[in-house]
Image 1 (cartoon, rainbow, N blue to C red):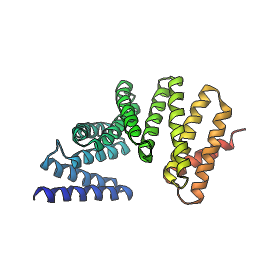
Image 2: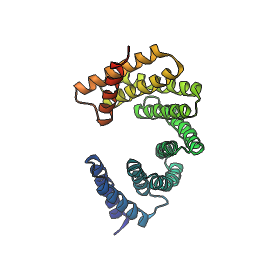
Image 3: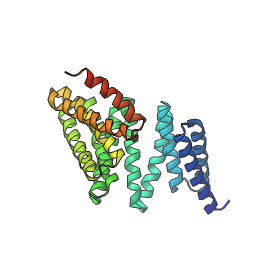
Image 4: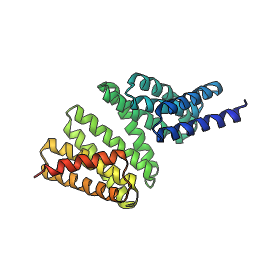
Length: 251
């Protein structure tokens, strides 16, 4: 098999894995991603994006299965390849940033706060850099909002409410702008509703209950509209149910 054929096989296996994830066939997806990783490894694992992408996706699957050790290993394999690729093609900086975000989330789940902080700080710097390079790119702005949200979560875990508020305001402002720019984008609207809820939780800790309830009601309004239009995913449906219960018990 020549390199062109190998790259075609790797791409096909990655696509097959993605389709299996959509069908919730996680074991089959894992086999496809593992085969893609092995095929890429036979070509040039140090410089092949297919190898890094396969490792990254294997890490995502391991996280879903709560196999944190396997996820750590997979992301640790993906990150240095993404870094090398980014020195050649700057578009891979986003891959570096998103891989770091996953490493940070995993570290927070395992209560490894020093590791989480290091990954978050670099992730946030890269997200800012990428977003500022093209302020009109909606997905890059969304990435930055996500970086703010992760830092908010980290700061709340550490009891730093001032830092948490700073990042909550920053991320929420970005998502409000995106929702205004394209009110038909269901993903952006659901992101805003999720931000409403996270921000409200933080404001509840600071005692600003009036604003917290206002944000919860806004999140509920957005999710209810998306549900009526059939545009709400599983995560959004769960959040809507939680909000319905929460607001029902709010004076």
